[in-house]
Every structure is written in structure tokens, then in C-alpha cells.
Image 1 (cartoon, helix red, strand yellow):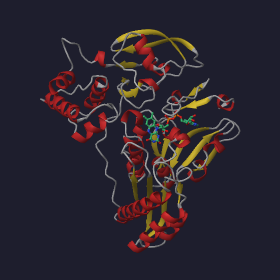
Image 2 (tube, protein in one colour; image 1 turned 30 degrees about the vertical axis):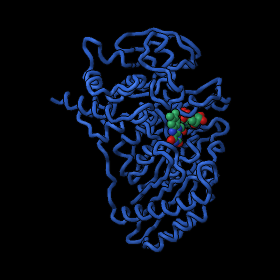
Image 3 (cartoon, protein in one colour; image 1 turned 120 degrees about the vertical axis):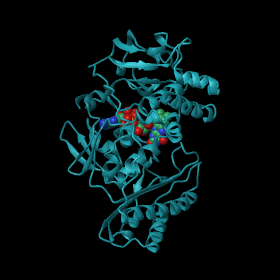
Image 4 (spheres, rainbow, N blue to C red; image 1 turned 90 degrees about the vertical axis):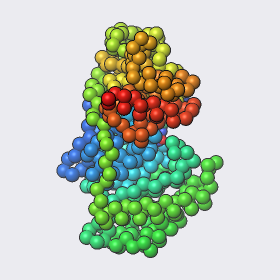
Length: 440
Ligand SMILES: Cc1cc2nc3c(=O)[nH]c(=O)nc-3n(C[C@H](O)[C@H](O)[C@H](O)COP(=O)(O)OP(=O)(O)OC[C@H]3O[C@@H](n4cnc5c(N)ncnc54)[C@H](O)[C@@H]3O)c2cc1C
């Protein structure tokens, strides 16, 4: 907190900070603080500041505690599993995309932010914190945890985007809580506005204390369209966004009311068993020095600067399987497994690999003894131009290590964002073939 008060910039997953072109002289790496737990306390979900979006997708607690909304919003907000495995909930809350449906979900879930502050700790409700996080963080504040109080009965998230992986033109998030047959609490939040995502109080109060009949929901959807300040930009006019909001709000209201009325428990997908990763070992005041990293089973002692990326460290050590692509986490070609978990090595500080294990494609197999995935990728012609193949193989390996018999959907989800040049049909087929070969 003292360092943050001096202007040292806190670093969560780094997917915003390290992907930006802005030079930051000093970083305060929060990952060593042990704030990544997700647990339930007095029926409230408590999410540590450095819990990643993927931790929430894989948390069996996060589904019942949020009517399935928080894991769904994490998946929707970042399509790539690799990015979700790095980005933290706190980082998203502080500086997510201006149209982040995850920020809208935190509003609809009445999240409360616990801020550690050198002057005095404070609790800030989503309605206040998310409007302008710097107000609460000024003077050395750090988000310590996010609390989601008492589960709603129903929830829904509806969105429209130009491409599924792009931020939405508009999204609407609704949560409902019933008391008997009537709605005691309704939260409606929307994106696509002139500012950050916001709640639409007019629509909420219109539905509260009613039984949620369809006519009332239609009127509430109309209120969302009329009351929220939708934005006009190059992608859509304000009127177009308003029309989308009307349709999405009605769908979301109907979905959340229906699920809430039936007290329908959320669907929980098959979750990967927790990775046995050790987490980064804190190294105090690291400006430069020698790091010990095990790469592909070989112990490396390498010099690094504070801002050396894991990608540069590996390539400097002659390990070229991790490709240098966009340098901003977008192309996926630099993906490696850090203690078994896929990370974009261009956005991972080398210092985070201290004492840990890295696997690149060179460690997967040899020409004489290829890994089953390598054999099947060659047989199926799944190698495309080859630039992204190492990333695809590693994403597939981390899936098969955790889930030996994946469905096609699970394979597609594991490979999303790892290849930007071609179709995924053959790689998906190859991973399924490798799985069935390993099963036999
Ligand atoms: C390929 C790619 C795709 C992306 N797609 C999306 C997308 O679809 N939607 C979207 O919303 N975002 C997207 N992002 C942006 C980014 O992933 C998110 O904003 C992310 O959630 C940021 O989290 P982080 O932990 O990586 O933040 P960081 O980059 O570590 O930090 C972001 C900000 O939060 C501050 N911060 C972090 N933790 C704390 C804390 N505990 N206390 C105080 N301040 C803190 C940092 O100082 C910084 O100002 C994408 C990024 C990449 C690279």
C-alpha cells in the first residue's frame, strides 16, 4: 500500500497493463500476496483480488452463489481461456473494457469491493466503485477482495456483438430474487452507454413487487431502451443500440424471471480438476537478477530484467517454440504452459516463472518419439502455416491432461484464441482423435 501510495502501479494479470503501449517505470506485482482464493462465507461468495476469470469459471462455488451469472460473464467477457487464466476479477473491475458485460454482471450481483487503504480500509458497493474506481483507490488503495452477497434466484445475460469475441454493441444483465410469488429484488444493468456499464433503476423498480407478468416485463424493457444513455460511435448509432437493448432486455428479463420463479439451479459444466500450480514466488524489489526456471525438464539459470517477458527469456535461452507474434496477447502464438496452465508468454513477466516449470512445444516430444498430439496433428493435416501449431498443441495438452475424454465443445473452448490464421476444423478433429487414441 505504501508503494501504491507512491505511484507504483499494481499489477494483476497484466492483460491490460502489459498489453498497453504505456511505459510504466515501476510495477507492484500482486500475485505473490496469496489473494487468489474463491470461497463462501456466510452464504456470500468471496473472491480474492488475484483470482482469475478462469478460476471463477472453474469454481463449483461460483455457480450456485450467483445463479450461474459470474462464471457465464467471465466466459463471455474474455473468449480465450488463456486470457481468462491470466486476467483477474479486480483488474477487470478497475480497468475492464468500457463495454464489459462482466462489469455489468458485478453491478447486477450487488458486488461489494473491499479496499485495503493506507489511511483506512473501506468497503465500496459496486454502484459506487465501478462508476469510477480511482475515487476509492486514490492514495494507495488496493482491491483486496470482492464479495457477492446472497445468491439471486435467477439471472440472465444477453448480448449482441459484431463478432462473438469482440466486446458487445449492447449487453443486458438481469438478476431476480423472489419472495413467494412476487419479485422482491430485480437488478438490470446494461452496456453500450456513453460511460461505463450502469444499472437502470427505472426498469428495476417497475418490476419489483410484481409477479413478473409478461406485460410488465415488456414495459420494463421499454424503460431500459428509453432511460439508458446509449452511445453513438462508428460501430452503431445510439438508436440502433436502443433497439437492440429493447430486445435484449426483454429476453434477459424473461429468462431471469422464469429461472428465478422455478428456482432452477444453474447448469454447471464439467469442470477441470484444479491445476496443481504453485503460484508465483514473491521476489522483493526485483530490478534485475538471475532466475531459476525449469524449461522442458532442463534447469535454466538466466539473467532477466524486471520487465523481461517470459517470451523473451525463453527465446533468449534458445527455446524458439514460443513464437513472437502480436506482443499483446491477441494472437496466441506465444502460449506456453506455466506449471501446466496456458499463459500468453508475451504478457507474463519472466520473474513470475521463478522456481516454476515451463513447457514449450520442444518439451512435448521429439522427432523420434513424438507426443500423440504431434502424431495426430500431422496425420490429420492440422498444422496450418505452423506458426500457431505449438500453441494449439500446448492448449490441447493442458486439456487432455485434465480431461482425457473431452467433448467437441470442450476442445473448441480449449483452442479458442490460439490460432488466428485458419479454420479450427482439423485441429479439433486431431485433438478428438488423440483423445480416443489415448483412451484405448
Ligand atoms: C487478447 C485480449 C483480449 C481481451 N478481451 C477483453 C474483453 O473481451 N473484455 C474486456 O473487458 N477486457 C478484455 N481484455 C482486457 C483485459 O483482459 C481485462 O481488462 C482484464 O480483466 C484485466 O485484468 P488484469 O488482471 O489482467 O489487469 P491488469 O492489466 O493487471 O490491471 C488492470 C488495471 O487494474 C489495476 N489493478 C489490478 N489489480 C488491482 C488491485 N487488486 N487493486 C487495485 N488496482 C488493481 C491495475 O493497476 C491496472 O490499472 C483483453 C485483453 C487481451 C490481452
